[in-house]
Amino acid sequence: MNIPRTSFPRIVIIGGGFAGVALAKKLSKQEVQVVLLDKNNYHTFQPLLYQVSTGGLEPDSIAYPIRKILKDFPNFYFRLADVEEIDTQKNKVKTNIGNLKFDYLVVASGSTTNFFGNTEVERHSMAMKTIPQSLDLRSLILENFEDALLTSDLNERNALMNFVIVGGGPTGVELAGALAEIKKGILPKDYPDLDTRLAQIHIVQSSNCILKGMSAQASAKAEDFLEKLGVNVWKNVRVTNYDGKTVTTNTDLTFETATLVWAAGVKGATIKGLDAQDLVSRGNRLLVNEFNQVKGYNHIFAIGDIACLVSDEFPHGFPMMAQPAIQQGDQLGDNILKLIENQHMEPFSYTDKGAMATIGRNKAVVDLKRWKFQGVFAWYVWMFVHLFFLIGFRNRMVVFVNWVYNYVRFDREARLIIRPFKNKHKV
Image (cartoon, rainbow, N blue to C red; front, side, top):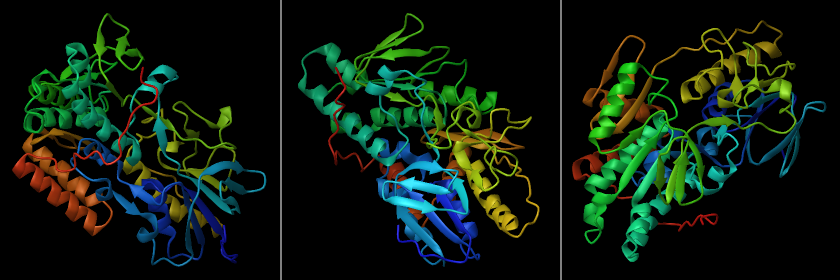
């Protein structure tokens, strides 16, 4: 990998997400060598992926070059690599571009979509965890309406204009709200010769409420917002199969659709060599102690979505969101330096800063520690928080200008089919 030898301890970080970047920044000016490995050369602001999928933003608005984030930091190296295996005996990371020895290893590989073993659904549905996946979904949505113009079969036309979103968490709720606004304000103008009123948007949730991790007040208000936007919310319904045309459930309810978006869950992206059964918890996450050390190792750590730190308050680990990842990365930087100096490390303590979700124009729900509120003010809070955590001044300005333009004009300029997408598994 052409990483220079040094007398400083070498810390290898796998993953350039929220956790990996926070840790690299913490260690950036210390007497250590930091090597960050990622299969992409950019950091993705995942909370806004749904806006790329629905034409509200271009992908470069929510992506930022990893090299630029840490360009002024000494002893930092980035390599574009796909990590294939971790050799814990020889303290070596094996990648598609070569091998690299480490003194300390931090796994921050994040998460992937969890289809819960349903291979048929995985084959035919759309996921939305990465920028390429979001661009594919954007192309498919627009292509479906183009195809709907061409068919004389009413059932096929309806299926092309129907959207089923599986999962009522923040991703599913925000995507449904965005699609509903497109149906209301954009499709009639773009497709005047198509009766877009027939388009249907469905959210299918296996439990008895949406936004399950938020308060009952937020859940009820979000459902009310969605229903007023024309979204059909189906609770206590579990999707059992999707063959590319028909969605079947554990009830007598079925849907005919050309687009099923799977937002029902995520799982840790484990790596060969650290995927033994005794190291992995529920959700395919690596078991770590209060110092984020992987079970059985003193010099190997895991942070972010891939890490499962069990506590009384969080028996299944911390929520797989940005805040726990950022906080873990920040504190682990201090702890690794203490470990190098043979000092006592500090146990990780998560500060819950709340949760929020937007359901569209002037509609959002916010749960803070002391206050819970919904509506227009919550929507402004949601926008401010997301702008604040975006990396890079340009990205913040571009997103802000896009939001203002979209709000004033009730438009989404990025509804472009840049790279046509066809699911090769569709029947």
